[in-house]
Length: 486
Image (cartoon, rainbow, N blue to C red):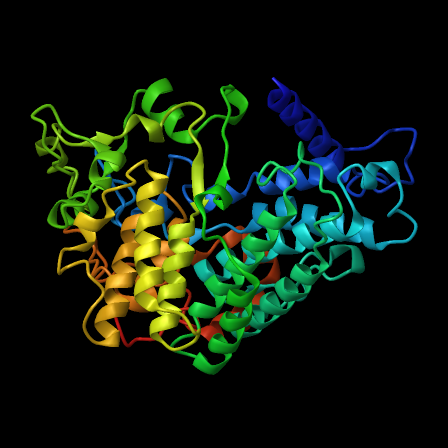
């Protein structure tokens, strides 16, 4: 009940933040209220986090691109018919909220006001907001490449046409922002655990998330700026990331219609069951005798884990009615949505160890990553049999080791951060995913396209971005994605 009341307050706070103001206060800018409560601004920004795992169930593209899901009713999205991606709400709702929290805590005139101090100490509010802002920006630039960044949200200063910054610049600045935020966190001070719906005010966990995001950024520089990637990764690794399931980044849905798991909406409320675990991942799990198979899916009526092939035509879908379905744990009304797991971070560290970026044993980290994934799904104790397989054991050349590490990241990231899984594929081509037979494109998209509403009023800067980056289509690669692997 406490959480339900909290979300009601958040909605009210958001309406006040974006509302029309008081008729008796005609000289006040209605879009910039004089006392927005940082508690509600911060909580609302946290609500964007699970969208990087699955954008509702209308077009869960970030689970479709890595081929974790297949469509089982109407073939609309796995043929890549939806091409653009809107960043607007991420800016004007979430990043703006976080920047407002930072501004209110930085301004001497407001930092001691009750509508600011109730969220927590100045240091922790700013550090957590900078960390979450960087987390959001990382995903946006990984999806699109060049985006407004250094001049974003400067409308109050009269800049309504921000330039698009290069991804190289954004990555460099995000690492700086996160490194500064890490030192700003103070575990002896507070962050309101009721309104911090990600980590309940645990600053030690925020610091681990901060270091983990820096590692996620740094590892993507392996092909374009390996020296910078190595230096940034080593610093983040020394600071310590998410390596225990107790520190997992997840979003907790509620037994409440206003904030329930979107898959519950689709499977239970609507009874549509539009999506199911794809044949691509189920077949790979079967080939590896992987016990996570039973954690991810339930078998069909014959007791088999037959998946729906990815990207088939509408005419073919009728042949696949008796297939494996989601394990119910994924579509309970209050089912938790894991975003970043310790398995993902440990396996990133294993790759860094193979590359010689950190002084650590790659096999130890690799095995720890698999163990963490098994433990996350209640499969502890099965690691030795699984690891004993030649297909799993970390052996061979460095390139072969990185391929195995990447495969385990793909297997472990099912229904988690799909943008990260897609980024892994773009950088390493593991697994060797291909579009389905009904697709009209020859490869899985390398990026999404800009959304018309996001650039039509800023056309000159949009034109400059595509002149620098390449055509605004699926074939253009983001900065860190080279053509070496796919």
